[in-house]
Structure formats: structure tokens, C-alpha cells
Image 1 (cartoon, one colour):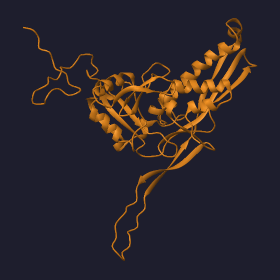
Image 2 (tube, rainbow, N blue to C red; image 1 turned 135 degrees about the vertical axis):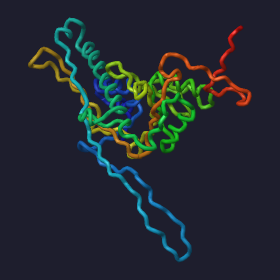
Image 3 (cartoon, rainbow, N blue to C red; image 1 turned 45 degrees about the vertical axis):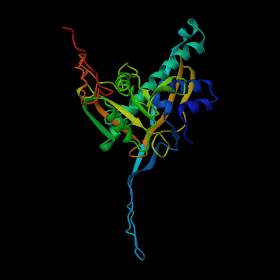
Image 4 (cartoon, rainbow, N blue to C red; image 1 turned 120 degrees about the vertical axis):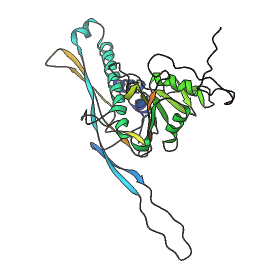
Length: 328
């Protein structure tokens, strides 16, 4: 059975483990929504739909022309993610009880791991970090990457991104800066809404019923989906989740949290957080990326001239502005 991390936290009977899982999910809009399949062993083989078989029509006493679909067999290995939290015995004794001091450090370590995993989900590249896994930027190719061609975000681009996903995506991920661009574009459209909430009761913006979720900075304070791609552009991602069908996480057991007590070699209390996990994309159209999008001002800080509405066009569009005439 596949569970999201918030669901797994509810089922955990270990208070320390439950707290760590909740911090993982609360600090990442990806880990909050992504289902994780429990698997046996350290890898998982699966078939990804390639080309569907052909069909035909026949007359009486005629046969069908045989054809078979193409299936791509893929394999995903699990990675080991985690870290140790050491708190000096002196700090524990002089600055409060053991649970308070160690809990603070454990929460900080967990948040850092959550942000690092989220960055790998999008930007992971085993050629650069062989101990990790390939993220969506590396996995998505061909028609699953819509080229914004260095232009400002438009409603057409957004709809193309949504349409590139099988059925309808469960979420669109972007940075806070890109959210401002998107809000500017969709605010005047009927599909815009701010009445939805996430798993923790936080308000979420939606477009056409699809949640728009923000990806925060990484553990070093750098934007994960910032305007730092080629030419000062940024990307948005549309994703459909589902175990064995679309995008799903893999794990062998849930997040492990172990209190190792005081170490013999030095006077510190150690807590170890560890997680054997991976990522699988079961359908070729389970996710899509809109790349090459710039800010409205082109990222230079200077505003572009506004587009003046003409009577021929019947007024300005949702993204156009009428330039006021200067007084003479």
C-alpha cells in the first residue's frame, strides 16, 4: 500500500519517528503529496508504456492484422539519505532537558534533509552525484518539456503545460517569484481560486482546480526552481501522482529515527535519521516541465513598456496594460 508521508505519520506509534516524518512533509510540498510505495530489496523493476498496439476494423470473414505494443523496462535503485544529530552532553545539561535540546537539533536536521531531497527530486543528476537519483529535470525529455523560448509566462503556456500531462496533473510546482508571475497571468481568469488548503490547513492557490504549490529554497538558502537557468529563466512542473501508474516515491520501510544514546568515543548524544528511498515515473506523460520562462521585466529590474489597448482588439487582454498619457 502506498502512503504519503502525512498519512504515514498518523500511523506511526513512535513519537520521535512521527515528529520527524511530519517535519519532512511540512517543509516540502513534494513530500507532502508524493505517495511512497514500499518495496522489497534495494531496487524496483517496472514497465513503462512506450507505444500502444494498433487496432483495426475488419469485414466479414477477414482477420485482424497483428500488432503489439512497446513496453520499456526500467529499474530504479534505492538511495540512502539521512544524517546524524550530535548534541554535546554539556549543552544538554546546562541548557535544558535532553528532549528539548536534542529535539531542536533533530528538527533542524530533518528540515535540511527534507529540502535536500526536494532539490534532488527536481535537479538530481547521478552523473554529478552518483549517490543520489535523477530528478525530473533530467528525466523529462521530448514533448514533456515545453519551451518558453525566453518569453514571459502566458495563459497559453500554462495550459500547454497542463495538457502535456496524462489526464490532468495533481499539482503545479514553482518558486515564489514564479508564483507572482503566474498569479498576474491567471488572476483575471475564471479558474483562479485561493479557497483551497493543504494537508496542514495552509491556504493554497489553484488554477482550474489544480493546486499551485511553492517550492522553497534549499538548505543553503538557494532557490531550487529560481530564475537561474539559461538566460535567467526558470521552470514550472506539472505532475500527476500515483503508485504503479504515474509518479511515485519508493522506499524500503519508512523513515528510520534511532536514538543511539551517548557515544563512547566522545561525550555527545546521537540521533540517527535514515531513509532508503527512490523515485519512479511509471507513465511517459506523468509529468511535464515548462522551461525558459522569464520575469515580466525580463529579470533586469527595469519595466518594459506597457501594451496599449486598441479599439480594433476590443480592449487589452488579461496580461496587457494601458499606458497612461502624460500631461502636457
